[in-house]
Image (cartoon, rainbow, N blue to C red; front, side, top):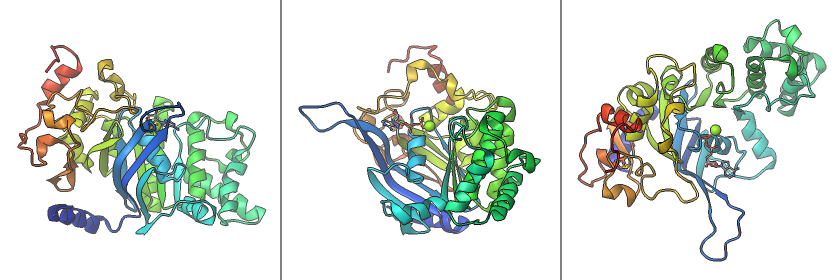
Length: 371
Ligand SMILES: Nc1ncnc2c1ncn2[C@@H]1O[C@H](COP(=O)(O)OP(=O)(O)O)[C@@H](O)[C@H]1O
Ligand code: SF4
Ligand SMILES: [Mg+2]
């Protein structure tokens, strides 16, 4: 790491205190089951060299199209998947892989809220059961009275009221939004310091998405949680997260303070995402945005991903070097960075972004897109 990078990172850490959870050079390859007689074993290169730091009381948005590796990162951070390579640090200490007590202790601090509230709750158990389990497992409550009191308090905290009514309900008696509130309460029951929310509203009715997002924001403030907010909707990131990270095909390509990334996107992929979002000044409650990206620009195969910058087959500014190697991270100031040869890496690239209008025209396929 260069001195300037070290200084920028140190400055960021000073502003925000020490990170609670960090990942560095994190990589995940899912092995393929197909038998291959020749050549090295093949796999899905789902996440490549990912880095992130989460801070108490701050939200980080992880943005990217479906299939870009967001869930895989969250599952590694929740220790549901083992990384293929890389390091995770919790409170500055390297997280050692393995099960038993250390895994349980880790999960008490780092909780994941899943995307689908319809499959994440067990239909044969009531709300009390779902919330009492983590209270018992993590030793926060023992007697029935203690459990009832704490379950009621958890329901209050996620605004399921009257709590006395919700405690006895079964999942099928709850709406999608109410189920997601129960799932969030179950995560809170462990008393975590880190909450990983994997597209927590994408399967919910449009009308209640904002309520659930506001609930997460309130909990982040009240409980000083470090929040990872995964979304495919870059416009909402600005409203819900101090920091935004953009992923493309398993690689992180841009990141920094959300206002900078969203108002002044530097990476051509981030620019494409924003040009496809209907209105960056409005919270994208309809879940449009990425869904409108043109079909011809689908995410590439991760079994045999494009060499170098994985965006090069779609990039309007691609240069020969882009397919030869992945660009180093370039610091743009104020904590904003990108991995793109347009902004440095010593290859004599032009430090100039492609105008948004060109990208929009290309995205809409209204001109000959051959380079
Ligand atoms: N358990 C798995 N086995 C094999 N491939 C997987 C598995 N989980 C995810 N993948 C692949 O990894 C890539 C990233 O997936 P995912 O992390 O779910 O992306 P996102 O959450 O951004 O939609 C995709 O190509 C997906 O097909
Ligand atoms: S590195 Fe090259 S291909 Fe990748 S986004 Fe930048 S200009 Fe485009
Ligand atoms: Mg996902």
